[in-house]
Length: 373
Ligand SMILES: Cc1cc2nc3c(=O)[nH]c(=O)nc-3n(C[C@H](O)[C@H](O)[C@H](O)COP(=O)(O)OP(=O)(O)OC[C@H]3O[C@@H](n4cnc5c(N)ncnc54)[C@H](O)[C@@H]3O)c2cc1C
Image (cartoon, rainbow, N blue to C red; front, side):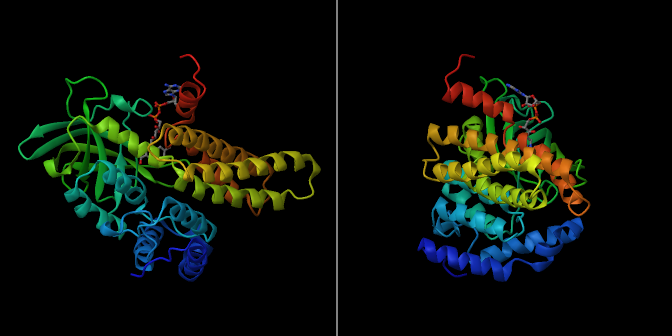
C-alpha cells in the first residue's frame, strides 16, 4: 500500500487519475442493470481496491491502518469518487460511523482489534439504532442487553438496518440499565452479527431494492470486551455517531449526485421557457449546498456550531434532491423516465434517514433560533 501525497493539489491530481484508472467499467456503464449479487461483489472488491490504492480511511490515524490525512482530503475524495461514478463500498458504515466513534470513545484494544479490518474492508458494519417504536425518539430503545458472566445477552428487534444481511458487526444501541434514568440507561456494543442469536429479515423498498432489514436478537451474546466506554454511556456515544452521519463527507457525495441530476434536467429542459426560472433557482440552491459543506469542513466536529451547521445542510440537500426528482419525473421523456422513476422513489427516504427533517427543524428552531418549545 502506498502513501497518499500530502500536498492537496497533488492529492487531487493523483486521486482523480487513480479513480479514472480503477473505477470498474461494469459499474460505471451498467450499474442499473447489475443484479444484487454482482453489485455486492463489485462493492466488496471496491473496498479492497480503495485500501490497496491507499484511499481507505483517509482521515483515520496511520497507526490504525488509515492515511492520517484531514477531513478535507476525505471530503475531496468523496466528491471525486461521486464524480467518477465510483461504487459505494460496503465498508461505508464502518469507516464513517464506527471508526470515528471508537477513536473518541473506544479503548486501545478495541481500536487495535477493529480499525485495521474495517479500513481494509474485511469487516462490514451495520448500525443498530432504530426500532419499530424508537426512531426519532432514539432514547426510547427497548432492545435489552442483560449482564451475564463475561458479557451481555441481547434480546429485541431493530429495524431499517442498512447492510444488515452483509454485516459482520453491528454498532448496537441497547437498554442495559432499565432502572436508570432516561439517557443514562443505554449502552453501545460492537456485536457479532454472524452468530446463531441474530435473525435477519430483509425489507423490500418501493424502488425494488432491499438495502435494509429487520434484525431480531434472541439471546445474542456480546462480550465485555465489546462494550464501548462504560455501561450507561450509550446515549452520549450515539450522539457522536449521529454527528458523523450528518457530516461533510455525506453532504459532499450527495452534492455531486444532486449536481448530476440537475445537469440532466438542465439539458433535457433546455430552451423550455416555462421551466427556466425554476431550473435557475434549483441550480443556485445546489451550489449553496457546496458552499455550506465547505464551511462545515472547517468546524470542530465536537462543537455545537458543527451540529447546527450539519442539521441545516442535511435539511437543505435532502429537500432539494426531492424537488429535483419531482420535476424530473413530471417532465421526463421516454429516454430518462426510468432514471427519474428510480430517483423519485429513492429520494423519498432522504428526508427520513440520518434523523428525519422534522427533527432537524426541531434542532434548528430550538438550538439555533432559540424559539420557545
Ligand atoms: C433508507 C433508510 C436507511 C436507514 N438505515 C438505518 C440504519 O442503518 N440503522 C438505523 O438504526 N436506522 C436506519 N434508518 C432509520 C432512520 O434513522 C429512521 O427511519 C428515522 O430516524 C425516523 O424514525 P422512524 O422511522 O421510527 O419514524 P418516527 O420516529 O416514528 O417518526 C414518524 C414521523 O413523525 C415525525 N416525528 C417524530 N418525532 C417528532 C418530533 N418530536 N417532532 C416533529 N416530528 C416528529 C418524524 O419526522 C416522521 O415524519 C434508515 C431509514 C431509511 C429511510
